Length: 105
Image (cartoon, rainbow, N blue to C red; front, side, top):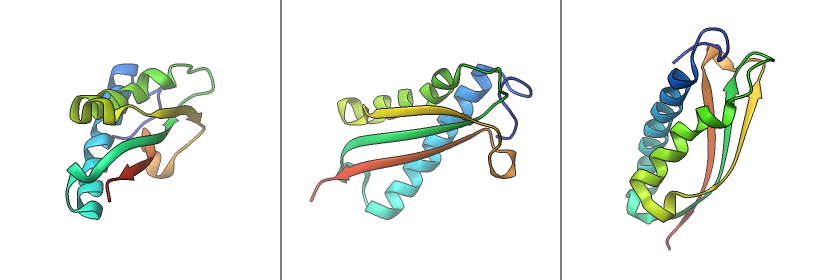
């Protein structure tokens, strides 16, 4: 999803963008790990939100990702998190999310 929160997109649309990013991240993790069952814990999440200077609901947007991880993984999906506003993101994407996960051996 493309656009800037506080100008082009609502908080709900941003929430959905973060959720869709979560689905993409799950696909990437499965490809990298072989099986999602190897994930022991989501450790840290950094959520970057393309937003106007007067937009203050970045945490509500990134909740779209966090809520999905808890729905999929339960306690393992809970994580430390930062949700920050960015003046722009590549290709005008609404949300970029970076994750650190711990894997089972």
